[in-house]
Image (cartoon, rainbow, N blue to C red; front, side, top):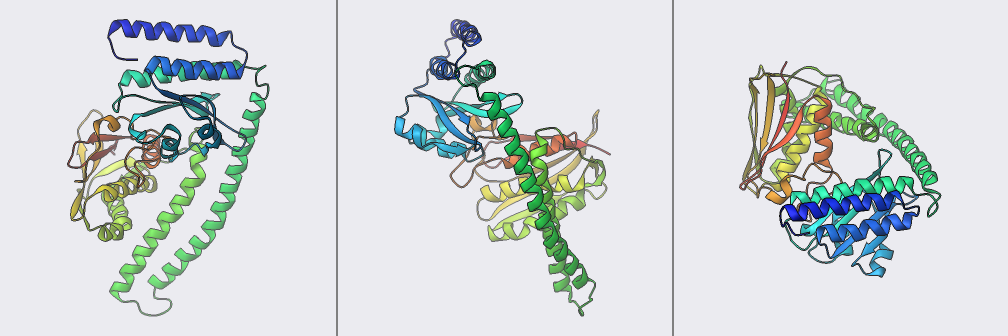
Length: 389
């Protein structure tokens, strides 16, 4: 819907009110889906709209569409993850990525699908996303209420819950199977460092310490993979305490150093030795590695990544860690969305994906915040703000 001022806003609210009434009186899931895509096209003046729901395998299937070829709809069956936006390009057509806008459908605190439109303009208004999200909320309520058109909705919800439980169990088994060899690897590295098998030169000791850091990070990633399924359910808790910031920064830099060297990117650290934050060291390192990986990925050859940490007076006092690169920056249209799951922004090399969303969630578990402070080229600056200790 073009932005024409108060008149357009009033019409949009009136349309949403009408949709709410229609969904209240609708018993069929198919009717709910048709109302959703028709209203999405009308509200946003979109040439194409689709509504997808998860099937029994947890994959997205298009259940209602407007302006999309039927054969494309029939073929579409994709996971609800950070690759979804790329795969939607094939559904919506060439050059669709910059005009794609989608919001999740949540039923009983579970993401059940996605309502998406292809807009006419490359840059959308914040109001467009608000309208689509408001419509998605109403559609989610309508789906939960609908019974005769699809009486097995509750059964499907129960099946998805059981499937998620099975996946958690599979992850638990996988984590156990991976932790055993990692523990053995760490044990042998410790023995090598202790010169159990013979003298070790200084260069060999440095290599052993680097391998120990990498193995410990892999062990941390395994633990994180096991916990991510519980994160959304609110069952993850962290044990925060005083953490010396510089050693954590040095450990994160040590893990990404070889990657930076391969990309011909320099790493600069500026952090006082006595800086202490209230956090959990392993999880803080996990967040920093994610930020450094992104910075390396988007930095040009012979570029520089700067890591700065300082205490900022409050109240409350905070420790701020900034990671800056001198890459291409982040377009303004994307800057508000880079932390959102289920949407990939950027180029075909992977964009911003799910990693930043998880990094923000982990930071918030430590009573902190992860922000994009500067996105204008050259470069971008991300900031981790944590309570000072």
